Length: 477
Image (cartoon, rainbow, N blue to C red; front, top):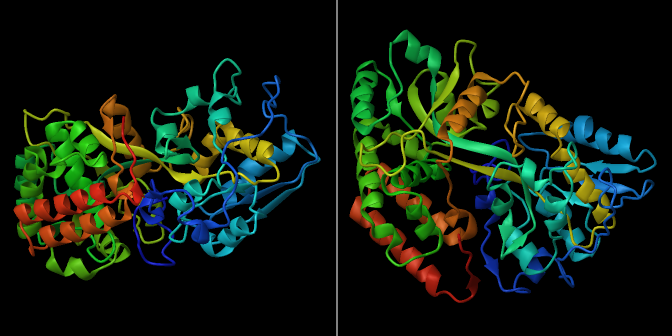
């Protein structure tokens, strides 16, 4: 799911990722959130049987019904109804599929967890997704280990795991359990109108010096060089800051932050990144954007009033209805500080998102596992890319598909990154950290606090969290 809006009803900004930001993935001790997620269950371990048939490794019984619940947000429900469900029905023609597509998952589905009658398959996404931490803590989800080890849909010599972009499975692990399939692969960067840049002979910068030099030209042309929405999208900007810090100091900067290591926010890479972006905020941003929502600032970019805008690869699809014909989305990466960076300019923040889960008390868990295996097939993933214009977590899912300019730009960047792909989880795992990071970012970028105050504020929040024994901690290995 996407990272954006914190506002109920704004569901189009799908994700990300990791969408766990809205989920708030801090995992309390089992049972603490039982009243929230549902009445608890015996165990989240899978009890589904397997077979030796690579075409039906989970032993699905043709005739057993399957209930599928899809979040009706940015990706809609068409991909399920027109692609994946027909593929399942073709394999098991006697099985009836019950399909529903609510816009508020927690409102409609959470009571069913409490009642011990959840659906078989759930796209737990959107601003009102069910708290994944509570579901895991209460043992409400089936583990997916058997799915990853099963023969892939297209090649029985490969496991399902072999067909996924590295990091996909790990992105859906909570409390040491693999319980969530993150299906859409999101790439983060800074977006601009390639046609506007071509018209003005502007070239997207690769270094800090090139950035400020170009921003001076853009500002002189009467266009705001850089913007994000302070009202509900400050995540986009701390994503930029952390990506920049990772390039300067290496991926361990992010790992240490995720693992709540002492002084993780006080290292030079963080300070340098904060100093640079605070300078961008002071000289090149519009202060009025602090009170605007993401859609309002994105519309300004479509209108030619803003040059650069940080976001994930869902942006182009999200703005499709507002984008004029002469606007051509392109993505560049967070600029490098200089030659001393540990990760080159081509390094990129990318991760799997858009969560799908199988309840531990599903009536047809075997069918749900097979449904996921179908989603991860070449046809299932490729048709999703063609329909939604977003990359999936399946290797080569976009092969043969005609990509939109923005998605093609993101894919080119991802391909060029090679092994230099990084991500972070601290805001996904810990809701209080997410809140503090967003507030501190706005304070920095709109001139209310300086770098030292940012570091002191966020490090203090991390230290407090680390000492809080009521919150179970996750670790990046």
